[in-house]
Image (cartoon, rainbow, N blue to C red; front, side, top):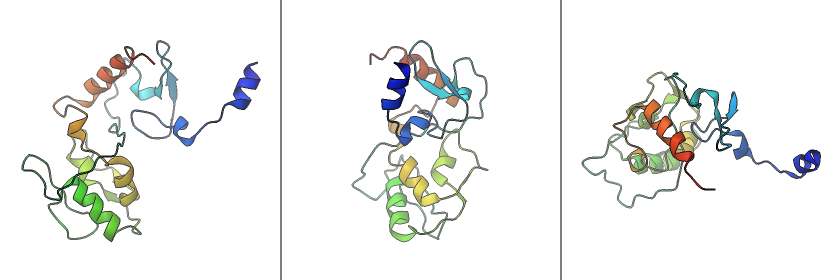
Length: 162
């Protein structure tokens, strides 16, 4: 019976990605209580604070290209364009740099509290399209540290009725 179930189960590429860091599982761990699977470094009780930022893209459209006064602005790491909102940087790179595959440091990731100034992004335009379709401030509390937010997300997942 287990073999029949396994043979009929079709997996998608998404089944092999951690829902927290959105990277391919390195050492997956299944949480017994809820059956969610995470990278081991995100398991409850982990004290490793060197985890990458949780990035789960959701479509978000910004009508105005001007950045509101309380929103950060970014400079394009591929050219001289400066002071762009997240959406404007995304649009600019899709329009002007679609074919450029150059390792750079993502200015959006760098601006986040957990940003790593040494983390190179191999394909910046692809990274923007996969990771920055929304503003983080809409989904996370930027005043809390990364570890606290992971713990809150895991605890809340125990209370979700599936």
